[in-house]
Image: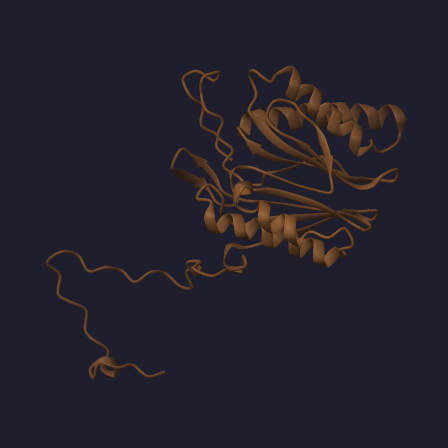
Length: 249
């Protein structure tokens, strides 16, 4: 997610530095996002929360311009709270998705937001709606967006199954986000997962050193880097065990 704004918003190229992923499974739905927030090439936050609650059972995965998607989520949450107060019932996922679509489309010349509306209701179970830049809305079994999504279409196509269990769906989402973080410089940091079913929302937080590693990945630092000597300083003493040119153990 990039929070930078150009001199002219209408002329600025949209930047969606993020990876957001969601999929349905029998009984519910799983959504996930990375935690990196950047301003241009500068990473300002590695543990940002890009998943906004719209109600107890509906969440919005946000990518694109952070202020744009935040104002959309705030407005939709306000409308859904009014619906709950008047009807006494939880809103449907489709109703929330259509509110996102309406705001996104009516302000398509001013907003840069690529989002996923993900939730569970008693009428349709787990549901995923894609709401990309421009105001389109599409209901899918799984959906991805953000800059990292371009790297994982093949993985998502080949590995998704409609008969996945909850554990398999959570693993699918986590691996998809981790694979995108491997190749996309605008995605990284931590991974947040939320599983939604009839019992509510279940949150999982994957720290940076627990993100799955893949071939050619740089390993997460296991300790503080060794300090380099200052120019002109005396060289550090060589440990006794290394004097022979070999360290064992």
